Image 1 (cartoon, rainbow, N blue to C red):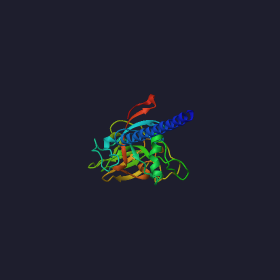
Image 2 (image 1 turned 90 degrees about the vertical axis):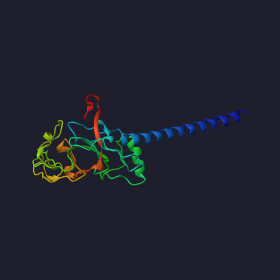
Image 3 (image 1 turned 30 degrees about the vertical axis):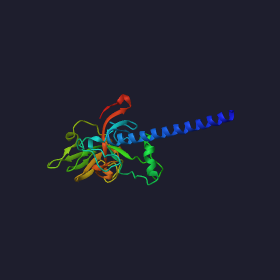
Image 4 (image 1 turned 90 degrees about the horizontal axis):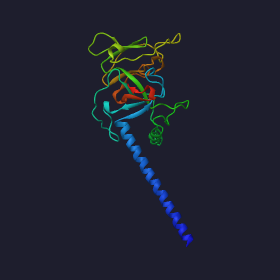
Length: 249
């Protein structure tokens, strides 16, 4: 009699354990799907990975980003929601990194899970030295389609379409922000990365020129060129961490 009860108890405990695992697995999958829907269409969180936007944004700051403003892509479909407005000069945006190469299968199936559990910080994509390659970058839009832009002394000068004169970025862009610039090493050519100079460039339809506020410490459109509209993921709205510097951006 005892042996029969023991076998029944063990079987019941096993069934309960398997049922609990299935429930937890379903909950995890549902949470992941909801996370992907919300973060890809409505509101996402990102951690600043570099010093390129100092002094406004520092490394390890955390921000809220809205894909909805520029027209979010509907998850699992190619269609997009209508935008609230188009990207404008001065917007701080998250873009798909031009230097990031999505992994091939089966790693491409693991990548979303790693990003989900690491809050966008983890990745299976590595460079030749083994360092993680960020999938996203945070930059400031300084020129929009139709603008002609040139850079001198780390300051961007913009000639809007239809205008005959160049205007310094901070006189043209609403709001105020501080540009960090310094002296480059002796002999640093204008063509080198992080240079404070850039020849005039007229942006075509669907092209945006992005810069970091820390001009001497930013990889941006000076080195990898303008980005397309599709590369812009969303607008940075609010810094929520650290709490002492939280606020609207």
